[in-house]
Length: 67
Image 1: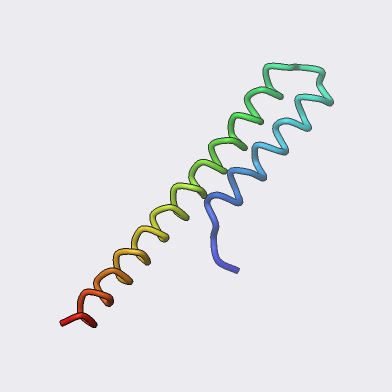
Image 2 (image 1 turned 120 degrees about the vertical axis):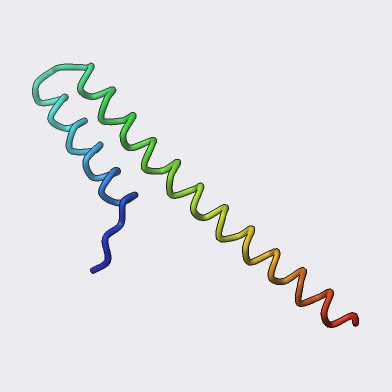
């Protein structure tokens, strides 16, 4: 299985949130959900970058087809 930074961030954040709930420490819960949110932000940034590259390649193909 390939290493996925986003997956590890989301898992670590979820574990931290659950541990915070068990310890009844809301600062740890908030910290865990912050880590989860960062994991999703990194994943969305990578998806957006991938889509931009794909659309640029498609535009280049369309320009080449017109020539």
